[in-house]
Amino acid sequence: MSEILCQWLNQELKVSQTVSPKSFAKAFANGYLIGEILHKFELQDDFSEFSESRVSGAKLNNFSRLEPTLHLLGVQFDQNVAKNIIMEKPGAATKLLYQLYTALQKKKKSGLTGVEMQTMQPMANVRLQNMKSEAFRDQRLSRRRQNEIMAKIQAAIIQIPKPTSNRTLKALEAQKMMKKKKEAEDVANEIKKFEALIKKDLQAKESASKTSLDTAGQTTTDLLNTYSDDDYIKKIQKRLEEDAFAREQREKRRRRLLMDQLIAHEAQEEAFREEQLINRLMRQSQQERRIAVQLMHVRHEKEVLWQNRIFREKQYEERRLKDFQDALDREAALAKQAKIDFEEQAIREKAIHEQIAVERAQARYKKHYLICAEILDQILDLSTKVADYRMLTNNLIPHKLMHNWKELFLNGKPIYEQASIKHLSAKPSAEQRVELEKRDLLDNGDYEEYKVQTNM
Image (spheres, rainbow, N blue to C red):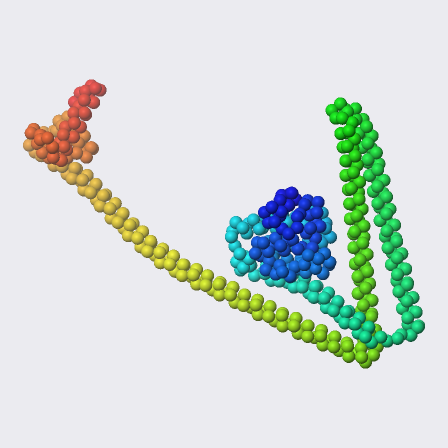
């Protein structure tokens, strides 16, 4: 994965420093290259304020400016991630760069700018990012404030030196000597513990290497059949060199961790001594009191500037909330209008549906009415036919004739003759076609009776 990222950085983006897998963690330790990548994608407008220096202040400045942009892209970034990258922890920079690569590819496909992404981001996430970025800024400003105060105090001490008594000097020197002795003893104890752990690890690794060499000795005969002596020796030397390099890197990391702890401890002690020094200097002389008043005035001015900035940020936030509320109101109005249009459309469609249902009911009623009328006409025709025949013959109707009438009745054909079929034209009329169908029906019935040999 690191090779893919190096190819992307060196060939596609063409960053200012050539990045290799071996120097990956060191190249991104100060955050400058990450800012350059975001600047190439037009996401880091304040890239001119980034520093390539590797001091702690420059690193803190770079990562505090990177945090809002990384959160805007959806990359997981906090103080622990920044600390791991600054301490060049293996895999920390690679993981962050991989997340940044995926996020930038998504942004490239979507075609959104940084401002559009910020406006599309939920307000809760914006507030959380602002709080985190303000925490970084507060930490940076507090450190700068402390450095400025100490610089002014040291300048005042140089300008107005005040002799101290020998007793206080001796007491202070004795206290400093005691503290240094305690710190030296603590450091010596920690170094002894650390060296003991290293010796245990080395012994364990030597025993493991001895066992691996014993096992390797058994397989040398097989390897000599396939490889030459030189290749085999080179592989063993390479493996031993890799093991030694890995041990050295582990020892360096451990020593670096120990040194970081010692530096942090010394920084705490230095801050405590600075506080004591400030307290003593505040009680020394009238001139120093005036200097302290000036310092307090400067601090008050800085506090006023800070409050003004907070007030301006609140105004910006209120403006953003108002814009967001206006957007919500517009969307609500559009949704309400869409709902009214939908209801009107539903009413129109309902009216059309009811009209279609009425037309279908009328058509169904008309169809049933015609069917019933046709059946009733056929029943009347059959009954009048039977009555006429009995009145004329004064006798029962023959079975054959009654069967024909029933057959015509069941098939929906008129019993009375509709038209004459003796003189048919090339295009017979509808009544003639009905008479032809009646004749065919009766002929088919006679044929079927003949086949089953039915006697009428």
